[in-house]
Length: 343
Image (cartoon, rainbow, N blue to C red):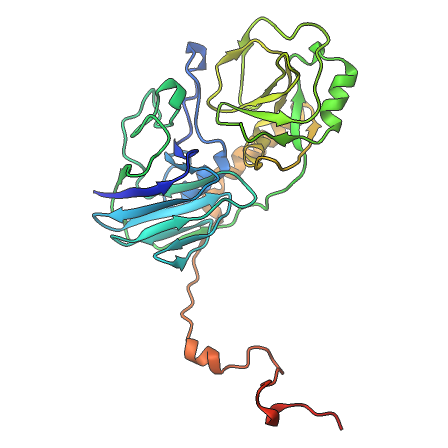
């Protein structure tokens, strides 16, 4: 049995898998990874089931060290500088940490969460069928809280399988698509138009329970309270202060604020990756289009194994490279015999 020992890690990092679907009717929050495509891609790279437990790493960096044998891992999601024992490594690919080697990750660039999958999965005791951490509910394994320095993740030794990379669709900055409702009738036409026509930003006070939006105040037609009903990932509640909150996987299972719209499932991961402070917009689509995009998303997840490619390694001869004229017709600036003097 091998393990990864955490030397340092940011505060928004935890073990997450596909969550606890089917139990929300009992009041059990679903939890799970905020970006299911990135989770699935990392897991497929090391031969795991797409929604097996992995480390969801927040915007800050991390450092993990292999102990008691080599460990094979893979990274996907928000890109960042990564190295193993000072050797730079690529994202969206698998790699092996030899016993005693450390994997060091820098700050996220252009996104918020990266996923570190471990070959053989993370060892833990499932709670209601999942290892996903929800600190408020005291759920999760092997630690029912965000990861901390000194934590150990038990796993199996690296199998010796060849490293792979994966080709994923390009990330787009298109508007986040939403379906109006289910309580959009609690808002006037002006308020709904303002919601769609405005640029929004995610507040730095956001977390896995909800993303607070920074932008104009959205006023209600009537009262801001409704009879509590169920919520889903992407429900956009508007409380009494008019500041929308997009509900995330660690949300409550029901809520009593009107929901002006819902982020479509196919765009939820892309929305979750938007860094705090970066502007974005919403776009309303039909239920039929949302369902079509979800079917396409499921097909993409199912097709991830077909997107795997071999990693091509090149051994550079640095002495030969130093002697080569890699700049084509360039000349030596300190050797006058090579200068091109016009007639």
